[in-house]
Image 1 (cartoon, rainbow, N blue to C red):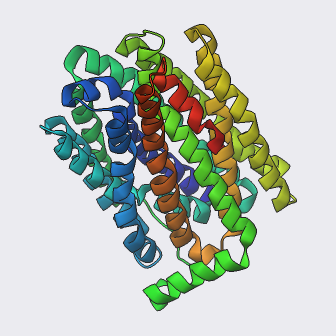
Image 2 (spheres, rainbow, N blue to C red):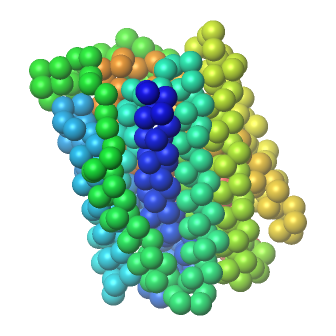
Length: 393
């Protein structure tokens, strides 16, 4: 019974994560038409693709961290899904950079709850023996969302405009929110959630990190993985267009294959490797993560320095595969290490830090590096800007 319900819940939560990813990745996928319409520099676009969106995470993350273990997670997820889907659809009607920024802020404000709530529910329904595999299946959503955002989004932008892509992306989430509200269940929690005050939750989380230094370093490692990965992803479509001369639809298709394919293989593989190699030792789980991070660096450099798409695409595919594998391996190790009664709140905190610090600062760093190389007269400044952030790994 639990297995059947667990599989059903995993499928629904994977669909939620897919829509989450599409809404999030549409901005980098449509970088060039958005930049041209509003006359943005790479730094300004980096902020709209990263910091503005993740600032919403920072604002919403703290109250969510305090609420997630104290109320119905399924109802909260349904409400948040409806909000971020509506905000995504509203992006189709913005008339200025500021209005787009406000819409993206609201998307981030609501999406902060999607991952931690889903992870907490998955961790409840799946035993530690197969939890990494379940997480790997759930993370396939990233692959699907990247392919749809870049390839389908680029095609729609070319033929009907970038605004249409946002409108079409927002509507399905409103319908799914109703399905989640009516069908998603969560298991009873072992610790009575109403007994925990905001002060006690904060104190418990602080104690866990103070008493478990490897867990703290693991969180920092995950943040750096996401920072480098998102910095390159935010400008991948622009990189293919500017450096290699690809039209926006072809750039979207190639970018979708690189990001979606790499994540599609890497994220499930990361969970599987954690279950197999790290079964008997937490130290092995950390070693798997470190090895994958190191392996991603030469792949990124070869892809970014290549003179042709034929060389760049396979190398960047490998970079995305290794980085995605590292992310899932780190996330699996983190979920296995945190106390079960604080799993929701501590995963929410990690999500907030990963998105705000990692995903939030990666694109602006890449954009400002590109603009800095342009100011000193470097040829192909975007190429060197992306190379400059690779050491984050």
